[in-house]
Length: 240
Image: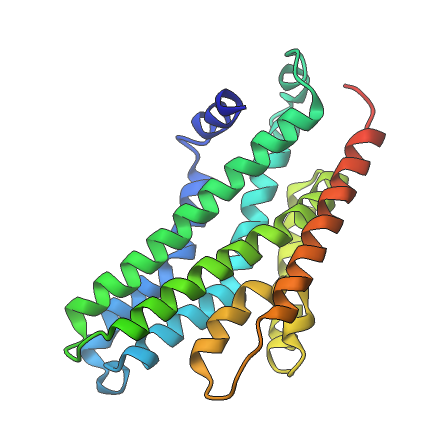
């Protein structure tokens, strides 16, 4: 399994698409670092971190990860090399798991980069001290957000595997962006699976108590349903 994951990562080594996805995922923390010295109101840790986190985890992040999943899972169909991929003595489940783990590794990398750029840059441009409580609460929120992001990936993969089309994946991303924006305006965004990664971040920015357990339970249910749908889809897929 390690060799399969390593092979998938090597395939992406020179991918401009993956580089683009990573860059748009870390764009807002980098932008905050550049603009904050010129914005006196933004030189407060909560305001500084909140802007980049809202835009990334509420909107851009999920869109980027949809495109990431699409690129990894339908790349062989786009390049017409899918027959070569299935010519090796490997089960469809093994290939699926290796691609899923590859997506998780890249998502984890993006979360680490986002956190490092946001707080590393903040230490340079914000003159007020960074408190231990603020730092640890955000670190914890990032971990929970990442796990919730992991939970919705199988469901995204299921839709992508059915369509097997880059244009359709972009359409899914646009629809998701629109729905996320709509759900962002409501008080029920914690019940919308594609907004789950944003809920731990939102908890940091509002004064009232936010119970994460409903979101975690929904994340577990979403992951189970997504994985079962993927297994069902793979079992029904004809051999190539």
